[in-house]
Amino acid sequence: MYLYKRIFNFFIRKGGYSVKFLNKRFWDDYAGKLYEQYDNENKDYAVISELIQSNNISSCIDFGCGPGRLVPLWEELKSLDTIILYDISEASLKIALDKLNDGRRYIFKNNFFEIKNNPANSILISNRVLQHIPPAQLMKYVHHIADVADYVYINESITQKPKVTKNSFYLYFHNYAELFNSISYKLVQQGMIGEQHWYLFKRK
Image 1: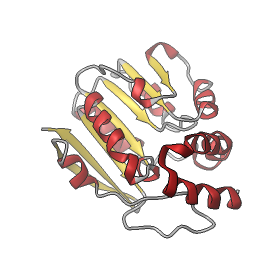
Image 2: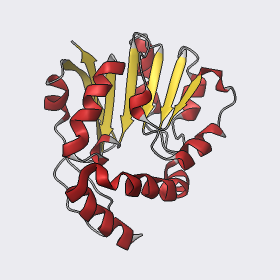
Image 3: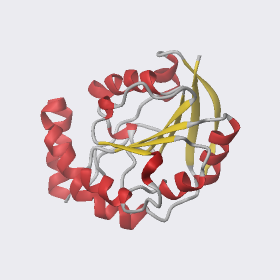
Image 4: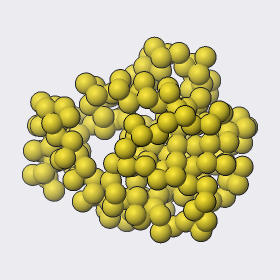
């Protein structure tokens, strides 16, 4: 895995979308480990639930949903009419699908740019996902986020420019306040979950 990460870290910084296959291959191979390592984490459930209910959110995009860590929360939030689970990894989406008790509210997407015309009062949830998108590709994603979400919840672990080590995958620091302000979102709430800093942006 370390050798793979070194190869990927080199090419992702040099080649942009020429390494799309490597990106998908990595997350497909990593799906099982994500499930084993993070699936029981639920410290953010209360914060996300409160934000959705207090803002009368009716539609949610779980951006980079992985193996469905947040699915138990979505199952509880009956006020959500539509839940879109997006991940580049088909292997992760299959794990998430197996968790559903009732799949009628869910839409599964393997391509983020296929998500169109999301209902009004929608939120996009991004937990440690945007930090893996290289700066050269970031604005393409951010502009599409603006097309499909009224609110954006960001919870990223990278708060300063990281050093790539044998224990890390490719990571990038992004200034989210500046980034979303540039596409007409305003920061309306923020807080801490342990050592993780979360932000809620709303379309101006």
